[in-house]
Length: 127
Image 1 (cartoon, rainbow, N blue to C red):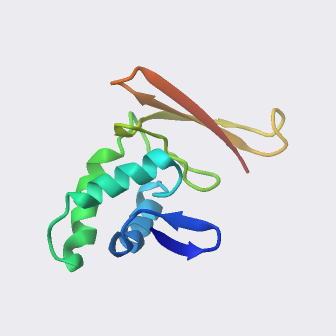
Image 2 (spheres, helix red, strand yellow):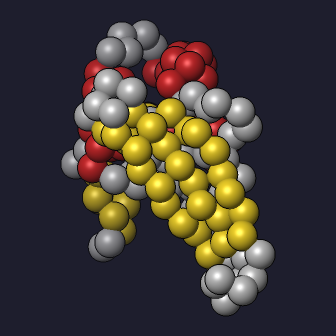
């Protein structure tokens, strides 16, 4: 387990943490956002058997197909909060942006779907 500071611990191997954080900023995910997310990345990295200097390219290739959308990628207004289940990243269905009024500032609703479970999750972020 890696201890980044007093408030952050992860089971993600140290060699993979920096590439995952970089790819997360590009693809809109946070590898430590939930227990399901962390378990997905730990399991994925366990499949890698090449030299460390090839890990980022290997991850980029695999992750590009894992984060699927029906249309556009989410446009997060706070930290990325891609939803995960035991099967990995959920399918991003779409985003609904809400002007101030319902909330004190701009807000967006993000909807995700897991077809194997028939599970739908929606989250809201307020700017």
